[in-house]
Length: 246
Ligand code: SAH
Image (cartoon, rainbow, N blue to C red; front, side, top):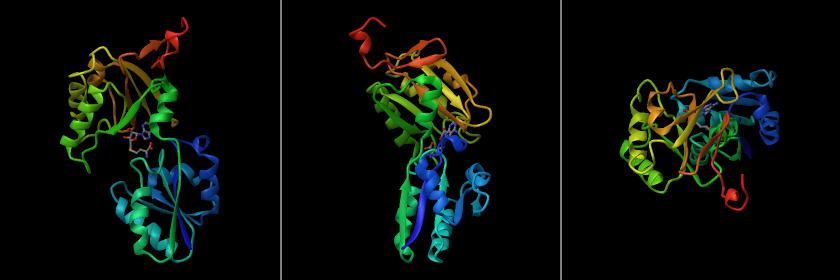
């Protein structure tokens, strides 16, 4: 069988790769992916062959990886964070049957919700969900419905793709929907460039989030009604403080 690994690299540099991710790349002849992610591994694996594509060519990128694998080479398709979370793993599995003798193996990585939450402290200490504000592949009314339900249930939320040049107003719309049920003073935070040069963390209240300089390299964290600020950190308590005086 020819092998394609779908590898999540975590948020940034080499210190975030898991041992399993490193091993999969070691075993591969060719590293494929979006240029920015391939650049994260180039220095660590200088002897590999590289195949890169630009941002919106996901289907072509997967086809190319599968075509290369068909020639007998082992391929690592690299993604940031986890390869199955808004990543390429699903598409590779879906397309693989169209190619000869291909086995896809998914290698998990640290998704931005988890790496970013560690930077902020422990904002995701209770039940949480992840919602992407990108309506490139998901209709906006579906995104609104999920935001409304998550707000109603007071979930902690990690927002991916919170803002881009084309989606300037999405974060404001999302905050307005969440404030139908959550307090405007809900403790929130955001982390830019997690694990990369220029990493920044900020704490903000829900009502102020839309005015913050959030971009597409940012993950936004929305608290629940228990979320609090402790010095430079955000914590969503699990409930131990009901037993102990913390
Ligand atoms: N597969 C990725 C998610 C891709 S969707 C993962 O599991 O992390 C792209 C979105 O993820 C970005 O718009 C941003 O919201 C978030 N993200 C990914 N990497 C990030 C990083 N290093 N710093 C901040 N946010 C990041």
